[in-house]
Length: 42
Image 1 (cartoon, helix red, strand yellow):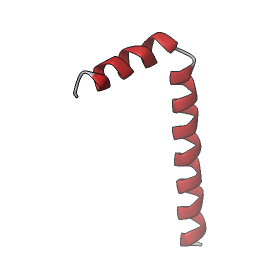
Image 2 (tube, rainbow, N blue to C red):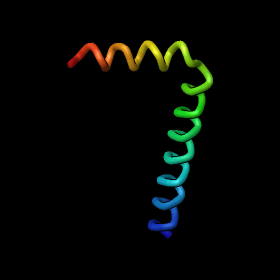
Image 3 (cartoon, rainbow, N blue to C red):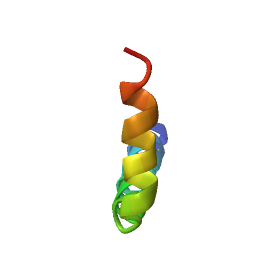
């Protein structure tokens, strides 16, 4: 029972992370700003 709950929580966290990533891609200006900040580190 404990492993089933742990697997469910891991799956839920993975889905939440994917939805968060998708929501960032719907704002291209934010992604461009993030890419520029990352590029300026080098």
